[in-house]
Length: 270
Image (cartoon, rainbow, N blue to C red):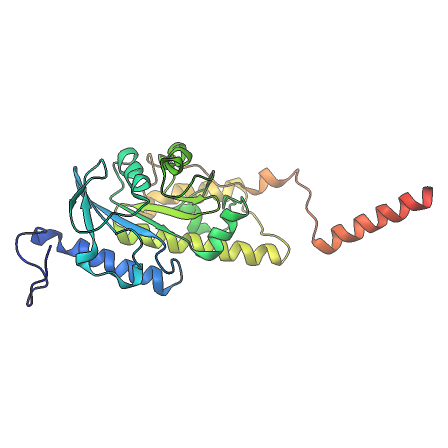
């Protein structure tokens, strides 16, 4: 794929109808970089061009500075079809999504700081808190750690990819997919925003979870809103208020007071 002084690209490669995908990856890469979802050479993006071709970002490139000629086309085995350099080190993860999810036509991987903080703490984002997240993503699970850039990541993800559009990667980041690149990217933004809300809610004493009845209403609304989840409407549902009924929680100050009182009583008995 080479520049053309007037139109931007020569007629032969890529096909003129596919020019938009090269430009869109560069645009979304800038969005990721400008919003702090990926810094330096972090993150990667891809788009399925057809049954046997995938457009993907190169290894190590800053996503905020991509040009269309930087991108590569690979086949379903990860072999380079066109383009210079090496494809993203996370190519195996992208290929897994395209193999398992025929409805996925784009994959977005980034390191949004708050969501990645949850992943580094071993915390999934699976509580029923925000209606928009319940409708659009359901439960956001945590995949066990795998060495980045290896098939270990795929092994950790495989059981989750079929039923989830957004997944936290333990001590690593977040990966999302969608029917197009913008949807995959906006799902990434949604995950980060949800993580920020959860972080704030926990600092204020803990989030108030919605009951199962309200979650069911939101699930039923998916059809009305035109939301299609993995395997129809069977995406795993978030944890509701009922699941927390037997759970005892303390604020830090309450826990410290409880422990101090227990220690005082124990000493008094001696």
